[in-house]
Image (cartoon, rainbow, N blue to C red):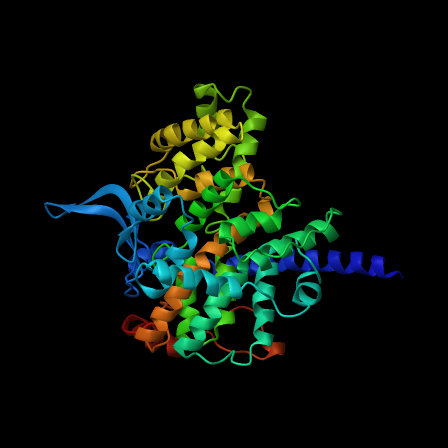
Length: 481
């Protein structure tokens, strides 16, 4: 029998086996949803009003979405602060000076204060000197087994870099800072080179490996390394730079940053911590959300004959919410956020520059469609759903559109998020190491029923062990695991 036929038979066998066993998994892992309320468990660690479980203290960033008036919590315009600075003020500052903001914002998050001119020049130089990979790393690691999933490729590269570090397990602050700065510097190279390898070996396109320029910003180098001719406009680089700054940090409670804290608390090394954070970020409910926005917009254009007709667009959005269109999950992607209700400050800061880039790229009609959906989607959701809070566009709503206009392939959408968020992860890793010396271990309420063990020859129907049932029930009320 040929190897190909063996593979076909094996795949069929595994499909049949997993399909059969899936029923067992569902049957024995389904939990009565009423028990979550009975035991006071917050699913997703948030209650129905969106309030989260307090699991730590941070001085790195602050998300503000509510005010207190007469003892009542009132939703307000969303605000985001990095180390005490309003994100609007930070972005306005480097925009007015016509500077790139990634480097100074990274300095702020890592070290807790804005740099002066000399400190910024020194930090940029340190980042530039760290934009290098071990000898033959691109050939031996990145070009081997290329994957369409660049986040997996990026994670593989990060873990492999640990093999070149003689101080991998040294968790002293000095060494961790050194490792974090190196990873911040090389992330764009790892991701873009990973894409170039995939684009060549899997898509049969030309292969480009452009080295970064020490005199350029992070945003400029990303575009330089990605494009065959290395060319880009100032507007393109400035908009990408702004996207990096807005994605750089978002409190300790987001999934990937909390993952960073959890794995750090176990005493793990920097490479493993960042690899875990990457694995968390790649999910479509987190860093992959902007891809879903772009796919949704493509589906809209395929099913709406006139995208300037507000009523026709509104009808499509209703179908989305009613689970009759696109992926039938009932979501308008890019709308709503776990914390913000009235507005996402990142989306607000981003929008005016999205319009500027759209005009440069002759995409004004597309921008108007996005703007229309941003305006009417909350109305549709409000009409169709019993929502407990307001809904507004989040930063993912526009970021995918921007990356499309920049000619960035969809495979790199989430890796670009990672190129920014690694700064926040690094800051939180260091804050965890400095302040807390305990492993993060949340409690889970067990609803297990004790069973009587029977030998293989005697097994028939399930038997409850009544001797331990009462004892276990008492124990479960007193403590959780």
